[in-house]
Image: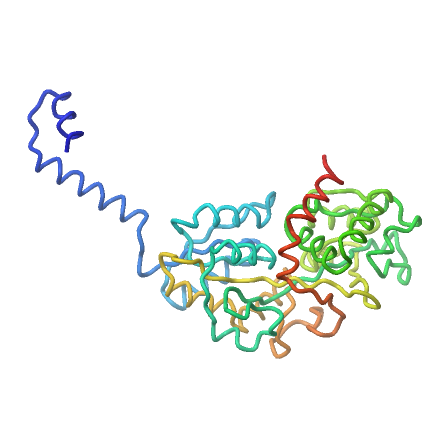
Length: 351
């Protein structure tokens, strides 16, 4: 009230206080309407490429009449930017659902008390290793961490069969790796630290560096360098490699370490944000995203997502879950190792 009186004095007028209060109330309603809860919308942050996720979210809109307001990630920061945003908004959530294209940073959000438990009926038949026992997240459509090789430069039968082949002298300077602080590469690094132990993992990455590994900006860049013949081999994901194959590039995929530790499989994850403004609509969206229909559509899309359920329809070129040996890791342990492994790799490959 004192502020209003000062304004009156400055303007040299005896404006009616009731009129001022009416203006304040009106402005408050407008502001509240811009940022408040709507019963007919849901807000989702998604790290899956917009070209793949947006059509599915549009289908949900059409089926339910619920407006989906989506925020997509920025390629340069992968999932990290959205995760940091969710942590920053923890005390005033602006988002209802987080669709992550990996798993470890979803667990980081759980450990930071950003998520709310919700056990979706659509997750009932998802394998237990790909969902949180208390319902904080559930996994679906996965990507594998594979090696992509240039078929013009490497004859069939001469492919590296293991990621450990790349520390051998015959592969010196012939392979690339995405900068290992973001996305699935960071998850892969942390998983290797869990699987191998710190000392052996650190030794492995030092030997990769000594053998001339080329660090590139991302998995898609790794794929592009190999497809262009600039590198013979690259670490990447099945979705990136599939893009190159469908474009007719001279590349093929190798699922590494089938006689050893196995190939790391990284699912998409979806979760409900704690104290979100539209939690009921968020639950409906989660049910939809975890449906077999969505998992099938992701398998048929250019992103080549591998269904985690055996009865989900998929094209023949998409591997069946269980048809190749996968790395057996506890993703909670991997999340716990993410910071430490990232710090080591940052110091090793500092730019």
